[in-house]
Image (cartoon, rainbow, N blue to C red; front, side, top):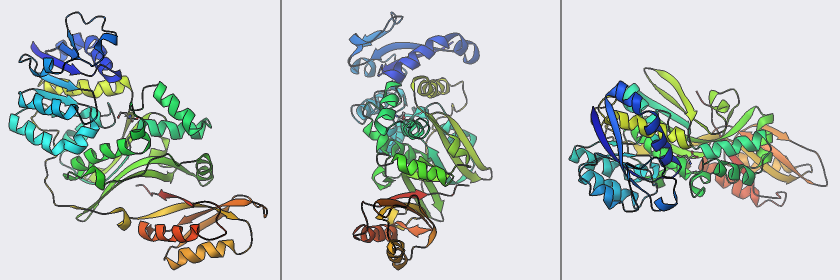
Length: 430
Ligand code: HSE
């Protein structure tokens, strides 16, 4: 039997899921892989307050040194999240010759390059399957299943909390706040849900996917990010009437020697498979030669979904599962691709203007758009009331962000405008 001693840091939602599954799968792991996973030490800063029944053979501690300094521990599972002390713990663990499994997307997105180099130097594994899409095998799809493919695009719904919120707002008429509270109650959101809502959680995950798809480490700050805080019921309803739906999409494309990477609310056709990804589900659509397009989907957040990815890393580490080759999970194609800035990117837009309802209003708006070279595909006025402000919805043809922003700034200043125009990017997906 291959006995593997584990030091686990972080006994929260995901950590306790991992412990549960280690117990439940014990017999299976032994029979299928000849592996015995022993939880030697469990570290959590509030371990005294946690339910640790059934862990009588595990050392419980609040000090991470008890794991790092223990020569018998083979693998450190880092589930505390955030940058520090997680980074220091991962670095120290690798330096001390331990393998590391982490679900920490922020850490891998920001420090992956440095950490993979260190792991390589130390001859250790650094696995991170749960960092994107929880248990959906997205990382292993890149590094194993599609290891020989050339990627063109990645479209992902990779934040379960945002997808859940948009879905609850659409289907149940929940307010943004009600939907967020429900996501927190169910354990989907981060401890600080700001990172979910403002899009940064998706951005961390997209940075990881870009490195795997295109072999390029991108700086998180260079990925344009917009969250879902400003999405209103009104826009969700109007989108539905146009056979569109709003998703927080993480998008990366390679065109020639350039990469674009962005995260923002996006209108997509309700007929596209990504439109059917609801609730806590995540999905990633990959376009890659010579395969074509594939869609991976499943529960992308939550206790057991995340635990599943961690356990699969553990099995791989035991040397028995697929992917037991050293570094199969590491971006391996150093590349000199350049990043497009958001100003250079061209998309179609949905724009909602709140304007007074009188003759000539449309011509004033379209006049400014025309001066900026923005062509209009369709115009809809939702109500008619000369005494009131009415929503006017315009769908544009492809335009650069730069021109669109300049035009909207000008239009906002017109006396006929009653509030700031709302613009949502539209994407035609393959
Ligand atoms: N908070 C994340 C989400 C789950 O809502 O998708 C872990 O990545």
